Image 1 (spheres, rainbow, N blue to C red):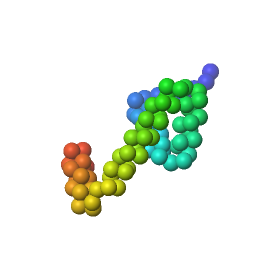
Image 2: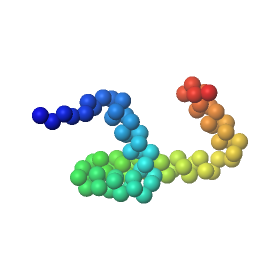
Image 3: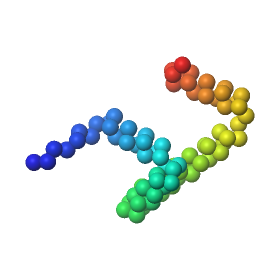
Image 4: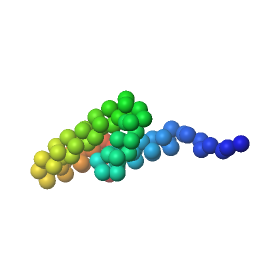
Length: 82
């Protein structure tokens, strides 16, 4: 009998974090394209996520250095990182 990995929420969340983190890369785009062929709904959602990543990067690049630092410090404070 085959032994399957236990798919815990933490494991699934880690996979999704890595997948969405790589969507901006060429390899991530290729994987998303392959996934969209097998499931068009997933493909549509991944395309939307890739567009959001591009818009967010563009917005962050348009900020001045002081605005970025202020924004990052605010996020760190909300998340309790520093």
